[in-house]
Image (cartoon, rainbow, N blue to C red; front, side, top):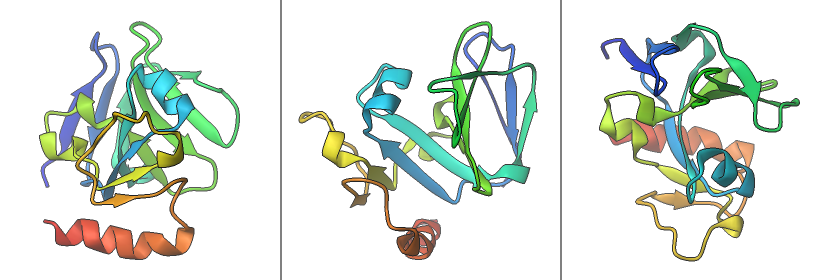
Length: 145
């Protein structure tokens, strides 16, 4: 994969990703819906060392561990989320000009889903997948090409 670069809405923050996502998802939880102002949030998961951030970011969302939501301080675009104890970061894929990164492979928190919300996800979970399910999910995502 070529390095991919994306920006917030105003361009003050640039994100560079040096490895492709190992998973994509849509989250239907109430918190993600409120932060994204949409029916769900979209995520592309990349290793933490594959993300480079240029420009200032500020903490937002719930603003407390274990979630570290980062936003542009100028336009307030939700950029990415780090989860304490995890070796990956959830980037907002719509900031990159790579349409397939926005197609969710799985959807989470469907117990909180709006009744009319639909995604093309191949796997759905009422909460988050059991940690033991991730190796098969990651392998299935990789097999898609």
